[in-house]
Length: 125
Image (cartoon, rainbow, N blue to C red; front, side, top):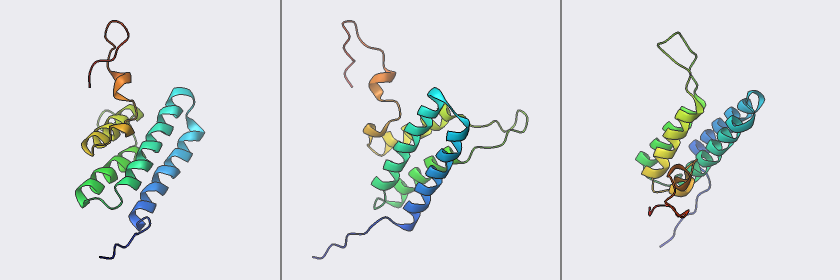
């Protein structure tokens, strides 16, 4: 049986370019911890895009939603449409990573979010 190895799909390239373009824009306006969070989000999203390039349409759709959530920041119009924060984008990206069985791509590793047990041990996961 012949298995054709394919390179990145056009949709994959588009999503990665969206992440890169948004990160470039964020680099001009963010500093410190916010920029670090944006960089980690972009790293996770890039890896999710690449790792699901040949996955089911449902899995690719979840990643596409996470990319768009990171990239498309709404303009604030009073109380009705607040600007999305990077922390909210982080929750979306982390949720998608977990749903796809990729806890290694969590923006904040699970051990960093869970309090340690006495003696410095992390709780069983």
